[in-house]
Image (cartoon, rainbow, N blue to C red; front, side, top):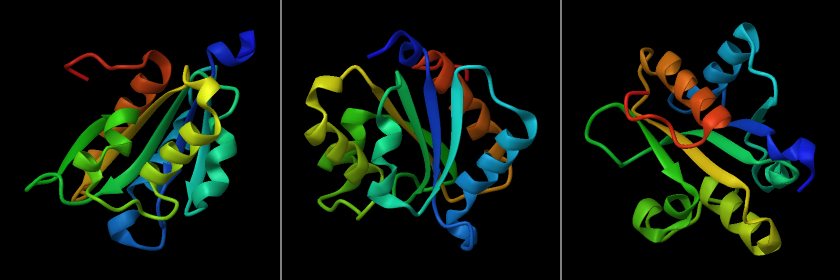
Length: 153
């Protein structure tokens, strides 16, 4: 990994902006685009590009995915998953959604075993509510810049 890549992080917003129940990441993308992001952090609207996003995992220190999740909680909330949790069957069930976070991470790991130093996180939004967008945005930035966030983030 190059010196420039050692401190670079990427935030990749996933989902379908045309479906209200899957557009939270796009709202976060719009908010970050309007307010700005710290130096060394890149912002990408991944939409529904699926495995085409795999190239965004290259030459960086950290990748933060943002996506809608379902079936993890009985009430609305925000969850943070590390790479192991993203690809584990315990987290997502037995299926890998085509182009979804689990398939992206698993494919990246299979193709780039030597680049295991890349930290991969997923900020998941369950049962999206308007109040969640600014909180999830702050969490994404915290994770992109610092990695594992403080407990009160």
